[in-house]
Image (cartoon, one colour):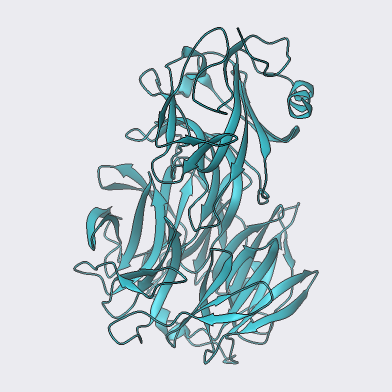
Length: 531
């Protein structure tokens, strides 16, 4: 006998309550196969290997319209990524569709995306990639950080032309850059992150000679963290001990983790500003560090001075995670296809962590010397480089394809960087030095919720009508994107999987999954949520 589910005039092809098992409670009996999943008021996914594989169906391969509805709850409080809620995505071809919650840190100095719900359809053969010039916030020399917060894209800059101070801007509805103020008198806002529903900025006295550029005439110290209060107002949150420059920040196990740049040190803050000294890694606990990220409940840090990578928890000290040849500095981290990657100098190489202090080659980005900004973007991975100011896209099998040149060649400029990245409004954004420009790329169909998903249960509904993909959250349309079925890859052998996406496995709970044989209307999506 078919169980309750949702009342709708559409034909239901499958209904997986996921309360006690992965069986299909509809008359079709399309039972799922659970891997490393247990059931407690929903299917519980561990963020590492849990998944429920559903039987093959032509309905979700792009040849037919469909609707997929489910309830989900994120459990990332221990330091896992939220990851993919469901997908029909082929990793080898990097093609197919996915519903994911994007959190990414280790994008050089920043955590640009935090719990951003996304629906995308990655194409195996994409159109020629054309980057759009989004202007120069404040006519500055560097876009130090990009961050998505409460529906807006924010940028922190170095050496604003008006007064050589670091400043924050946000991208307005008419593509103008709106001044959000300078937190202090230092020359850089180096990192922006969302923490406990608020936007935070770190400040730095950046030494431009490290990029072979003239120093800023403003060498006022930074070394502080500020909370955004709206308009152009910032309130002091914390002063990092013994530091004039705060670089990378990340959220880990309910704490805001901040890293000093020129002097070694890592600190964990609670939302009241209470501080715990986590020390610095390295043989003597004095190693200078470059970037922070979280992966599988651990905090990872990339080092300068040939010291490679370390990790820790809040309760355990730093543990050595290995290094590789031709790596003086670890500049960035990414998680892709469930693996931890790092980008290094003095060759623009990505490497994959194999465990037990071992890293394997993930490919070189042309003849470039350094990887900095690195970002997931709709099932694919992009990296920004030095000295050419290039962006590359991962093509598989350790190969990288040039996507764009964002800084013009100049014989007087030794280093041109693509330093920062963020996914916003269905596009990939990138910030540069020394042009101080923001660029964006729109490619395969992607819908993004540009605010963080809150704790607790939510209902996501995705629809595909052969012309558009649409995403609803809690009965409200987030957005939609046009799609051409003729360009979709064959997905016949690619299963529909709950709890997995292009970035990683899901960390949280899923229940009340329903598949319908048509694209429902906005009114029906609202009814699904109310029921």
